Length: 507
Image (tube, rainbow, N blue to C red):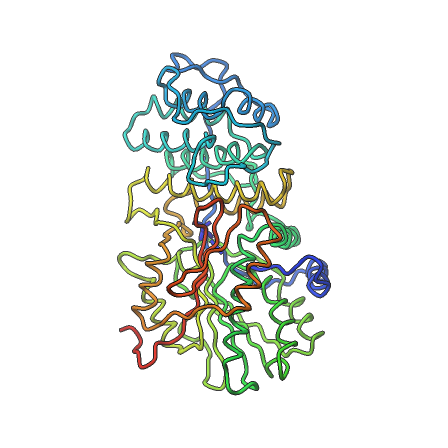
C-alpha cells in the first residue's frame, strides 16, 4: 500500500465546484487509451485457499459464532452480540474471557466508519483482536489456535461489510499467504478484490477521481505539494525560467491540472516551458512489481494546450540520465514512493536521497506515511503484521466515512490496492519510518527544512473542512511541517526541503 503503499503507498482534488477541473476530469475519462504507465509502490496481496466453511468446529475452546453469509446479517451479529466482548472471547479461546473495555456501542449503518474520535482506543475494533493473536500463534507454531482463529476470521470476513469485516477479509488473505507463500496465489479478481493493476483503465481513472473527491488521504498532501511548487517559483528572481518537475509520486497525474491552472494566474503568466518527468520503479531500482496504466498523457497535454501552457511529459526508466540544466527551476515531488526503498543493508534510501541532492533542485517536497517500519529487518512477523493491520484499519475506517457507508466499486478498488501492503516481503512492503527519521535522513545528505507558506496552510485547512470532522491537520512548531491525522492518530506528513547553504552532497 504501501503503497503503495507503498504498499506497503502514494494526491490532490480541487473543490468539486471547480468547473475547470471538472472539464479536465470529463475529458480524461473520455480519451482513447494510449496510456503512459505509472508505477504504484505497493505489492499485490495474495491468498492461498481459505479454510473451508464448516457446520461445526470440533472441540472449539470457545463458543463459535453462527455462520454468516450475508454482510448485513454479519453486521447485525457484531452489533447485537457485543462485538467488543463476544468476538475477542471467541478469538482468544479463553472460555468467555471479556476483552478490556467491553461496552456495547451504538449501532452503525453497514460500512460506516467508527464514531470513536480517539483512534488509540481499540474498543470495538474486533478484527484486530482476531488477526493479531492469529499472527502471534503462527509465530509460536500453535497450529490448533491458528486453525481456530482462521476459521472465525473466515466466518466473519466480508469485502462488503463494515470496516471490521473488510479488515478481517484482507487480513485473512495475508495470513493464509504467509502460511503457504510457495503456493501460486489466485488473481485478485478471483479472490473478490480489485486493485489498480486488475481493473480497466477507464474505471481506474474514474475511481481515482472519485477517491480524490471524497477523501483527503492523498488530495491533502498533493494540495500542499502544488502550493509549495508555487511558493518556490515565487522566490525565483527570473520569472521566465522553465519549470521542471521530477514526479516521484502516486498521484498518476491527477494533481497536475490544478497546478497548471494556478500557473496561468501567476504574475507574468506561466513559465515558457513546463516539463514533468515521471520516475518509474525501474529508475528507482526497486523490486516493485507491475505498472499501472493511466491515460494521462493525451488529456493532460490537451488540457495544458487549452490554457496556453507549453507542457512536456517524459517517462524516465533510468535514473542516471535525468535531463536537467541550470536554465530551469527543478523541483522534486516525492510522495509515498521512497518507503519502497531498502533502508537497512543496503541503505538504498539514503543513496537515492544523495542522488536527488546532486541534482541541485530548488526544492524537494517529501510526503510519506508517518508510521514505524514493519519490514523483516526491523521487527518480527507478529509486530510487523500488527503495524500493517493498524494502518490499514485507519484507511478502511476513513473510507467508510468518505463514502458515507455506501457500497462502491470505486471504494473497493482503492481499498484492495491499499490492502496489498499487508503481504510481507513484496515489492511494496511498508518499510516506513517516522517523520523524525525521514528528517534526519534529509538533513544528513545536505538538505535543510523550510516551512510552508500561509497560502499552502490556508488551502490545506480549507480542503479538510470539506471532509469528515475526524480529519485533522497539525503544523509542527519547530520546522513548519504538516501532518495529516485521522481520529487523533498520524497518517502522513508533508515537508519542504531546500539545499543547505554551503553544504555538500551528503557523501
